[in-house]
Every structure is written in structure tokens, then in C-alpha cells.
Image 1 (tube, rainbow, N blue to C red):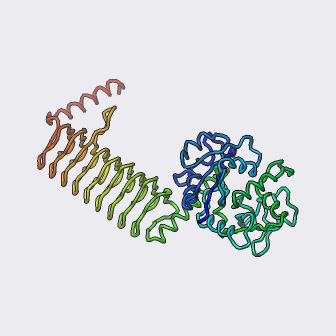
Image 2 (tube, one colour):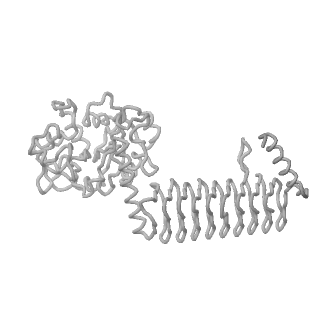
Image 3 (tube, one colour):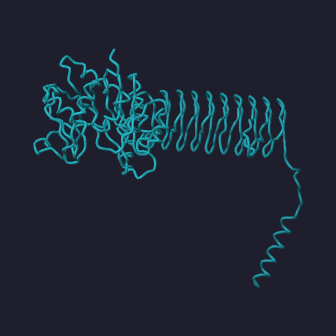
Length: 452
């Protein structure tokens, strides 16, 4: 099996983003764009991964850690120069090298495999370029090739003549070549061009001049090679990703009442026969089991939603929320690091944090678990079939036993035994006629003050 290495170019300044954050770390669907790309690369099982960094490189190095080795491009003298900086990191490597871009995040594993397969074809091309045919070729570099995909010339737009600019086949910038040939060809690239830079595509022209064939593989999905250089392009990439995810979810049996208003995370897991109403947002780390219903205007992150669970409307599930079969979280309920047992209900206006709620328990409106003392978080345990009345405060650490009842308006700071009623209220005081006397006195005072 051929060994594979990948060079990811991420040295650009990203000035059009107008951000202190490195361009490739901006997120799409809750995931840094470079992580989208590396997920596709890592599916190939590469022997080596080299990321070429420049400005703000510490951010990229911290993000990727030991997933990659790093090469520094400084100064930045073009894409060919950038790839050359990875040569030392690939010393001794004899396999195929993929050249990729950290700001082109959606390239599929299958596309990379197609490039590798073409490089290993019988005619043994010196390099394989990934091409695409956009609706508007704009100012992309052109690939001049025949119908079989054999390249006769690569040319940057600024250096192309009118006939070459008329070609609709554009260069994505992605390339595959054998390591030894790649760096040998790069050593011969000059910078006699409009930008005075060392262009990676020039290795193709050099190889062709040597009598070596080079080939182009064309993606049937131009959006796959869309680069992201500005906030507007980032937003367009987000919209593109979300649309594809919505279509995939519906194809898998999920009902989306208003698809354009539902937003998924890169790792959202959602089963068939789930219904998602309008204006729902899934943050990272959410799984939803079959039969669940996520009602309108709910926000979920780091949550596990079991079968036949109902969430919302206007619910917030935070990390660690675990809703088991048939449970219910209603409007304006917030769950954080808490388990709601099978059939348990918190129907409205409730906060459950650092808690375990037993099966069949009922949590009344306005109930809160007081889990934080300013220094430490504490646990609340509510037993099966317990009933917690409205407007109760459960002051953790505290346990409410099975089948226990907490009367409405109670502030509970000590454990409640199984089957026990706990009522923590001040004694009700009644003063007949007091309100009438108060109103009469205040009306007279107001009249005297106004002189009327």
C-alpha cells in the first residue's frame, strides 16, 4: 500500500478576516475550518502530516498539537515556496504527497483518493491537479487540458492570455505528487511572473517541458474547493454546510418543520423519526434518539436526548444534560449536567443543574437546584416518583427520596426521606381589615399631598 503524506498550507495572514484569530481557526458548524479538512485527511491514514504556518502560528500549533508537525514560511513568497518549507519535515519519505489548504475545508476524502488513484495510473503522471468548473471562473488560475484530462499548460489568471482565460477549467490549488519528484520540481521553479512569487502550479509546466505527463482530476462539486478568505465567505460556507446537513437529515428520516431555521453542529447525531420544529440550534456534542420532538426556539449543546423525549419550546439543554426515555423538558427550562429519568417531567420555568432526577418524578414550575455556593458545585438527588411543588429551592447537597413530596414554595436544605412531605414555609399571618385600612390611609395621604 502506498504511503501518503499531506502538506497543509496555513501560513497566510488572512487580512480580509480582520481578526486576531488565525483564519483557519474560524469555525463552521462549531468546528475550526482546518479541523474539517483534517478529518478528511486523517481518514486516509497518512504517514506524515505537515502544516506550514506563518503569521499567528502559535495559535495553529496550539490547536493541532501533536496531530501535525510544523514548518514555518517566513517570508511568504508564494505557494511553491510554502510547500518547499515542508521538505525537511518529509525527509526520507518516499510516498505520495497531497498539497492542501487550511482555508479550503470541505475537500472530501473520496476526492483525495481520486487524485491518488490518478497519480498511480499506468501513465504515471508527475503531478495530479484538482480542477473545478465554477459558474463564474472569475480570476482563478486556468488548467489547459484535453478531454482525457492530460494537461498541456497551467497558467495564473494574471499571466493568461484571452484564449486561456476562456477556459472554464480552473485550478483549485490542490495537488498530488510523489515526494521526490515534488521537491525536485520545486527546486526549479522561478518567480518571473506578475506577482514575483514562486507558484506551485509551475511544477506542472516544468514536468510537461521535460516530457512528463501531468493530469487533472475534476470535482463534480465546485463548492468542495471553495476557499474562505473573508467573513462573508465564512458565512457562505456555513450556509452551504448547513443546507447539506439539513438535506442529509431529512433523507435519513428526520422531520424539519422549517429546515432553513434549524442549525446543526458538525457532530450532531439525530435519529430517524425525530421531529425538529422551527428555530432550533444544535451546538456541539448533541445526540437525539428516535421519536424525540425538539420544539421551537430550543438550544441544545452537549446533551443526550433519549427516545420519545419532548424538549421545549424555548428550552435550553447545556453540557451534561441527559434526558432519558419519555421524559419532558418544557418551556423556559434549563438543564445542565443533570439526568432526567425515564418519564420524569420539568414542564416549565425550572433550572436543574448538577442533579439526578428519578424516573416518573415531577418538577414543578419555578423550581431551582441551588448547586453553587460560590466555590464548589454540589449535587441534588431526586428520587423516583417524587413530586417537587412549584417555586421550590433545593439547596444542594440534598436528597429528595422516592415518592416524597416537597410542598410548593419550600426552601429545602436537608434530606427528605422516602414518602415524606417536606414543607418549609413561614407561618401564614392573617390580619382582617388591614388592607382596607392601609388603602384608606394612603389615599388620604396622597390627597393631602396634592392639595386636591
